Amino acid sequence: MIVIYDGKEYRIRTEDSQLVRDIEKNLPLQLQMRKNGEAEYTGILPFHPVNDARPVTKTVPNAVYYFEDWNVLCLNIEANTIAPWHVNFIGMTEGDGFAELLGKTKGEIIVTVKK
Image (cartoon, rainbow, N blue to C red; front, top):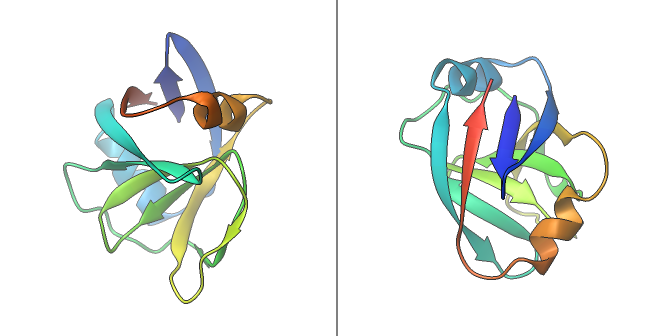
């Protein structure tokens, strides 16, 4: 899976799950994403994927998650403990700089997600 933002591609090493397969079969997607505090960007998915992915209550920078309660894809910026809530792990962006770039970005963004 690849996220494209500001003309650059960021590859995501995904875990094997039905969640990932459902998202991938609906690609490419263009998502309008909004910043939630300084922790993450979230974008509503236009479909409801089957969610069997590993739930986590501690998030890390450069990770991609799915939050089922809001049906959103999350691009994570900083480490957080979110218990009692949880998100489902999709994968990690490869290389450095993605979380730092998002951390410096203000307001809403548009990203493309493709295979």
